[in-house]
Image: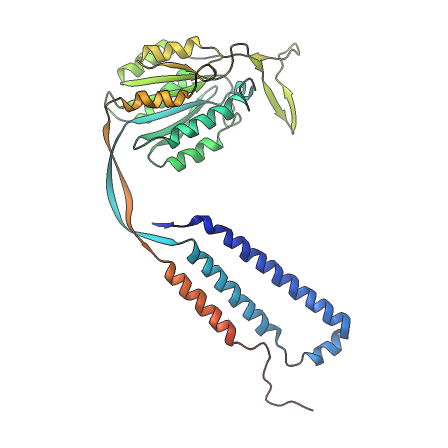
Length: 337
């Protein structure tokens, strides 16, 4: 396993790229100036003892040395031992509504972007809990299975948008069913489902799936996003921004519907939160999670990382020294005067 101790120095490779561009430009400009001053025939005689190949080879050596210096600068480290790590935590699935109504801008910048931002902050605050992602609209999918790799979860979160599921609607019941399968554990505790949705146009048998969640020991927290007064639904077509309209041409307005979200949370021992009416909603949810009984979660991670920048630094220095001792002029045994 390889990681880097100082990835912030990756900007050095931009300097190397700039160096390459300057070398290529200098090479082209020099040829232009020589041909303009002396012409092609005379320039070949004037530069008879000059070897372009040697010059280019020296440049390649210098470029190679800079690349190895850059690798040494970001501090490559190698993990030599895979060890089992034990933590105390619970399993958390976050089900995020990606239906088209989440494009409404009654919450800035819009419902989905705000939900993703708050969810990302929630993930950043987790300590030892496994987390997974489910996305849903007219149907639902497991986007990211339960994992302790929070950076991977956030990559999946960033990729979510209202076009990720073609079937429109708000299939909350289906999202709960997909989440229950994602837990996989036969234990009847240590499971939390967080549903983030505007609650509109829900489909499926909510009471039945909520009862199944209770039987599986899953506590559901629901977060409503949007306003009760509602807003038009933004749609994007070939770069044009407009609003969703019904068959009569009237602009469709979407509003937060809290009843179903409240019902689901209360029936499973959780709680409903309105993201706009309350502050730090996810912080309050996590505070309740911290008070729950934890289970032992095991994972395998690399340890005993050893720094290996010295190898790359040595190669870079060697290439630079070789470049210094290579001449730019070709040596001819016999020259006519």
